[in-house]
Structure formats: C-alpha cells, structure tokens
Image 1 (cartoon, rainbow, N blue to C red):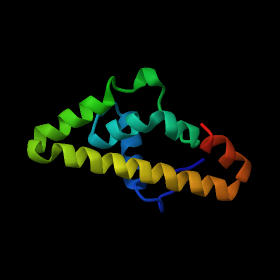
Image 2 (cartoon, one colour; image 1 turned 180 degrees about the horizontal axis):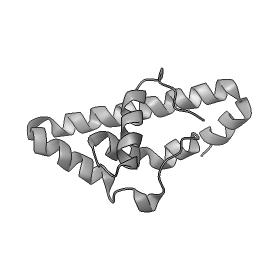
Image 3 (cartoon, one colour; image 1 turned 90 degrees about the horizontal axis):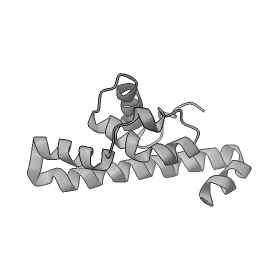
Image 4 (tube, rainbow, N blue to C red; image 1 turned 120 degrees about the vertical axis):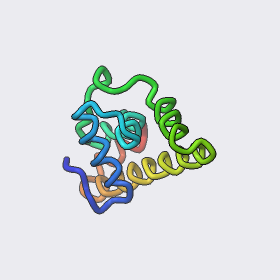
Length: 108
C-alpha cells in the first residue's frame, strides 16, 4: 500500500522513509524507526530492523536537544503525537477500504 499524502503527519513519514533509504538519521527517519512495528502492520514498507538505528527514541531526543535543549521534551512529544496521529488516520483509511483488515490490526 502506498503512502497517503493527505493524512496528518504523512510529510514526516515520507521524509523519514526517504532518509532511512539513504541511511540518514534525521528526526523524521528516527520517528519512522520508532513507529516501524506499527507502520509495518499498516502495510508500509519499512527497512528491516537490522537497517534501522538502535534506540531511535533516545537518538531522537538527543538530536532535538542538540538544537534546542529547552524545548527538546516538548518537541519530542509533538513528533510522537504526529506519528500516532498518522498511524490512527492510516488505520481508519485501511478499515474503510477493507473492514476485515481493520479488525486484525486494531486487536494487536
């Protein structure tokens, strides 16, 4: 299934996927790495775990703190909220297209 550009947070996910393919660990790439298990369940092609950075949660926070320590915590939480928003919207899109898939992904 293709990335749906109309979903909230799709810009972050698209950029993160592109960065991961180039082995660039940007904030978007680290966000995709954090969400990788769930994003795979939602039919996105995510690099294998071996190709993802270790401890993406810590690395994302450290990256944010490098640029703006006073707001790193708030920035981290905002990015996680956008990831979760994208995941929920994608699940809803999938469930509308195929109700059987929806019942399988929401029970996990």
